[in-house]
Length: 537
Ligand code: G4P
Image 1: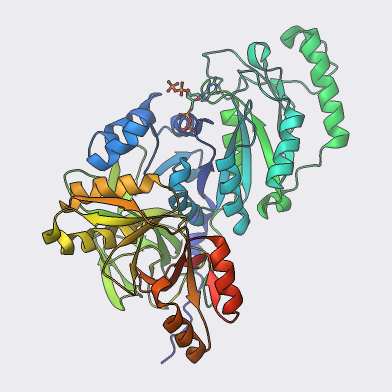
Image 2 (image 1 turned 90 degrees about the vertical axis):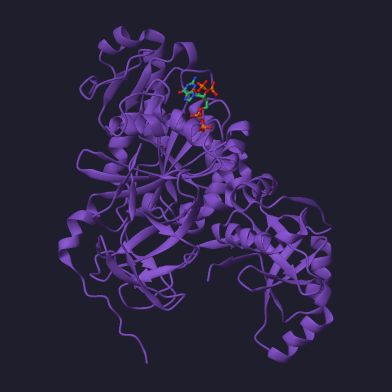
């Protein structure tokens, strides 16, 4: 029996969709993501004081062994969701771990956003992690707004930064504000669109009506306000930009080829409001989402969405796991029944959670773009789709082939079952990937970054009471393998059994010591497809 397409539009959803913005921040560690997040939440009234985001991080870190790894190493391991309001908008900010070892998680978070803000440290320019994250954004043409941070310090010249962004990230920069000086001489930013001058006063958070309108840059008032030499420089810069810079084009921004650029200093809350105002105005609301069968319109009456992240131990009192679920269409209401297509059952979502900046609360209703947290006792995996009826499969929730591998050593043989359970669940969360070779009984764990191995061992101990360690194994490449020709595939499996394993979802994986070796195998077996990424089931 084929399922009917369930795509009737419900116009009453439109106002809710239009006011939603769901985004993530991409940056290299230390560029100022935590600081900017905090300022955005302050503007949204979601927190009352500076320091709340950091202290929240620290408080969480103290709650479990797993998170104390985060604290010890001074990185943000787990990402979360913060909802806040600004003007008439409802904004979902999805936090992304910045450390390179946790990039796979970050990649998946980026599949759940509609747009992103990229922070660049003005002294450091484009850094490696930003470059990697941009590659992911490019896969989905995610629109990006750029915030160049730390103008209160000496940094690179704005035009040199633009050149670097354009060269390394292949995205055209269009300034919407322009800095006046930098470091000790930093005087503020000039809003090129609104022709407003914002004067920087360290330690003072500018208010909405603080900007000074300067329609004509030749106005001598400019010299009085920022000094003759900087006024002269600003006039020259703006004259140059008017001929050299491309005009802002909303369509180019929306398809990810142009980025509007803002300058400021997050720690001083300077330039942030300008960016936020532009963000709510130009960033896209939830749009069409591709599935394996058709594109889903957010205004469809039928509910749909997907899980992009599973997180354990958010609440130390309850050792449960939360599935982070992005709503793609329809309206969520508390207690609603949805079809969990992978397991082929209807489930009732009675106690979904919405994440405000400092608290979680029970959600009564939610709309496309919103992220809800669903309590999960092992039945929800990354990539799972729930809909009212039609079986849909949202695309673009990738798993990346690990680059590092270890063999797991169980210290207490009686705990073999718990070890398998723990590793399976951690694999479902996407913390690590687990492989069982076709030959032998060992567990091989793979990760995109080595820090995950320590996190895995700490969590096995804390959550599953399993004492385990790991040792190196001579593997560095894994590829998921497929082939349409069954007998050819069986032949391949028979001749390569010692290099094959099954991942946690039972997918056949070819594992070897080097890219070089992989190349040989590919030559020998031209009809086999070797995949570096795969979609979740
Ligand atoms: P991250 O989440 O991207 O890793 O960066 P975070 O916001 O934690 O900022 C990294 C460091 O940069 C912090 O300093 C922060 O205070 C500083 N910072 C952020 N924005 C600005 C800015 O506009 N100007 C200047 N000068 N510094 C900025 P820290 O010393 O590492 O931490 P803390 O002791 O200040 O908390």
